[in-house]
Image (cartoon, rainbow over all chains, first blue to last red; front, top):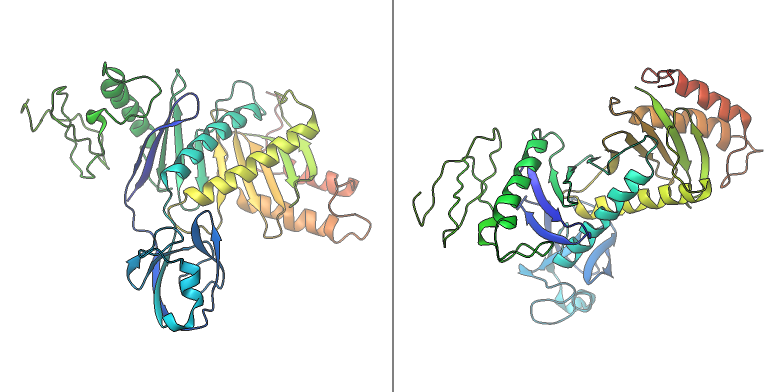
Length: 240
Length: 145
């Protein structure tokens, strides 16, 4: 997926909208016999690999499933603790799936607030006059683009480093936000965009389809990868 | 295109070296606090990036840019961080920062038995070599504006 996720942060730094595209994260499933040659540790309610990187299992990867059954944090599906289960030689051979841990919603909230502060510090430490905050942050696996509006709302998009056209995407998201969240009389400002059915998760298809119907019709917002054409008006409800 | 300033930090957050060439706006706080704020910001950005990244990272955080400047970052496995603020027109300069570390810092400071590590670098040779190297960079223009 070229676009990994979208975050909308209000002017106090709180996350009001978040969207992930389900990019397949690298996962590795292997069968192990006792004793385990990886060192596992408990961190933040998850079981992570601390040492013993090999074969696609990296340090920092979390235990995602044991014997095909997804684990729930540090507990297995039947309530037993993962580390206790893996410490018992009677349970071997066991098949464990490792992978990059997915962020919980609490973590996303914290990261959004952290970015809000980093944005402000980036502007304070500027060697030039009149600098804005961090508009683009580059790493080797993703690029983070941020657009701050005049009212302090930040639209943050994480995308592939080679993806172009994110600036117009950010403007487009701003337009959609102002049309469907701000112009909704039942939406309270700076609050999470949840009750707005018209700001629903997009379907990741190529053609845009977008309905301005304020009735019970649900809007489908699609991300055009290549060009940002004007959407056709169609709605399942009113067929406008 | 120009270079504004350069920071070098060690793994404990001590600012080993700072020099500036074209800096128009000071941070408004004492230098010591500015170094700590810069180090703290970079530390937080690194942890932010490692959590946010959808894939396993190799080099990690590389650079960020605002509307007026671009901050380039290079970190060695021993925790030495080289940070350079430049103009927006400058592309990836990871190799420049690597040269500053390997050919200047390691050669002139680490290999110098009289230079104590873990403190601000006092070596005049290092300062002058670094200054002439940065002034010789293709994206450094000596204009005052």
